[in-house]
Amino acid sequence: MQLSIRHTTQYRFGTPASHGLQRLRLRPKSTHGQSVIEWHMELEGARLEVEYDDQHCNHTALVSVDPGVEAVKITCTGRVSTSNKSGVIGHHSGFMPLWCFRSQTPLTAPGPKMRALAARLGGSGDGGDRLALLHNLSQHIHDAVAYEIGFTDAETTAEAAMAAGHGVCQDHAHIFIGLARTFGIPARYVSGYLMMDDRIDQEAGHAWAEAFVDGLGWVAFDVSNVISADARYVRIASGCDYREAAPVTGITYGTGDSALTVSLAVEQQIAEQ
Image 1 (cartoon, rainbow, N blue to C red):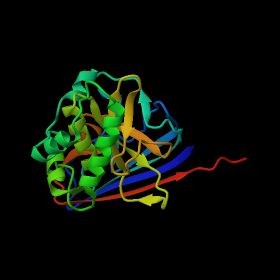
Image 2: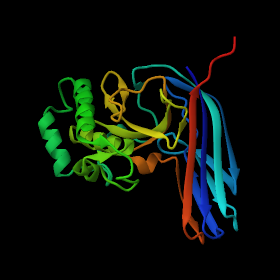
Image 3: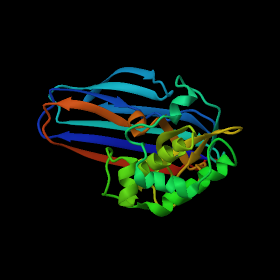
Image 4: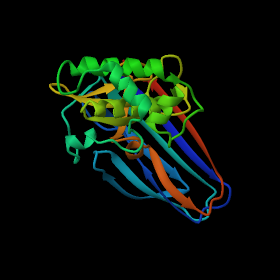
């Protein structure tokens, strides 16, 4: 499948910016099951300083905000070829050893609610059918935490979302990661795009989790949709949690209040005959 993507992020500042620096993880990875055909990034109100691959092999760009601007606009367009690998990404790569993905972060650390779910599931990541355990885990989280927008934000922890009983894809991913790690299973966060079946235009990107299964390698689990990623998914960045895989992070000074607008279109491109 060939997917066409257009992603625009715009910040409008209350007062002109005096200084700012943003870290962008917006270029998809070429990994097992997907390859980038073309990708372009345009900046308005900012300029590219440096590009590099981070510790998770995420393509990263640092951009500086032009002094005096009242808005910054980042537009990414491109095409990505994907195939259905039943969520299997395969062998581990990157500069981070596999054992790092067994350690909890402040966003994934379990509390009473998450530990109670782990106890109900039983089992252990050290033996038995690890793949079945992970699919079961995904289903239980989906049933326990309703997908609802407006109740959580980027700083919401997995335990807080679990206790509240509602959240979004970011929360589902963090809960899954935190619980997989309690079973000793390496797990990581993935940010990316999902082609929706019922619409092209979207208000945000998507997020899911990956866990490491012996004999398969990394396997993707989208708890929000209770499936493993297929050809409709495009991986952008991965990390121990959202903070290491966020598409845009940074800081600006002298801007007062700011407003964020995101527009995203993901659609299948039909090859010309």
